[in-house]
Image 1 (cartoon, rainbow, N blue to C red):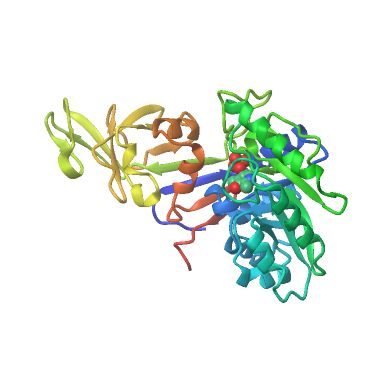
Image 2 (cartoon, helix red, strand yellow):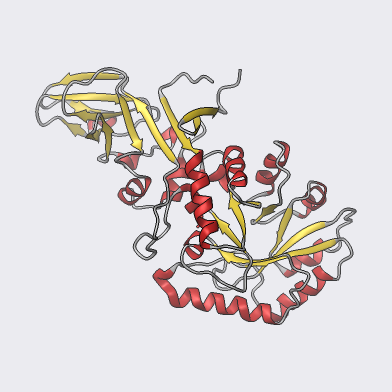
Length: 376
Ligand SMILES: *Cc1c(COP(=O)(O)O)cnc(C)c1O
């Protein structure tokens, strides 16, 4: 396990397992799908999928067919759902690889049923209950889709689901969506359907919808309450991802000296400046200028523009070369990073590029690494 630049991510797989177990505790008797799309929100799909399945998840969910095939190629045999659109040219491959796909549109389903399929193809019908992204919206069309899928000799309608646009920051909208979904289901015979699901993290953390039997756990598996202000929890989700670096240089500059591209920062006094080997090419975007990183317990401001591969911080004193810098972690939770950048934790995670190696920890011990830019 090697990497050659002192900037790295640590993933706590015990925390992933704990968060999965908490979701199961809150939703007993429901199948938990671990959402590992977008490389498991930047954490590493293979490692997170393994930890989630060991912790009790029964199914994996991804956004695209490529992501699903990546898991299959690496030996994951568990049920696997593609939640985004799958191209019709890939449906035969989906049936061969036993990948469940989402049927989201009447015309698409009509075309699907004409495909030459040899092996069973498992499909989840997606209803649009108010998000207006993917899904069939009108009752008559839903009924037609249902009939097409259930009467097909090779296609198996394995699930019906929808997706929520709001948590309880807009309870009325959420309830209207649930009601619309429930109303549509009333017109269908669900006896042969394995999974009915609607809940994402925000929903499953606070509501237990009796008429569903599966949940899709995403951001909360990664330790984040998607809506802290509205969703009080009787336990603490555990953070799963930390981002660290080390000072590559420390130097004293004089009052009036400038720092970085464009010379946008001017020292107000004689100051210690530290250089950190991380930049916007790592996903640590330029908007981080003016935010703080933690070195030896001190909050240190990012001064001057964030470069592609490096940034500079103002230190309270001289600090040794190699001092550890925390960008996300103890004292700097991802929620704070997101808030200060006026975005959400999802985006902070997904921005972290594959140039940063991911180190995996279990029982506080390093058990593996993923570094896709470094191949032996
Ligand atoms: C991403 C996604 C989820 C997971 O959402 P979280 O808010 O991360 O829990 C669930 N369902 C669908 C359809 C998604 O796209």
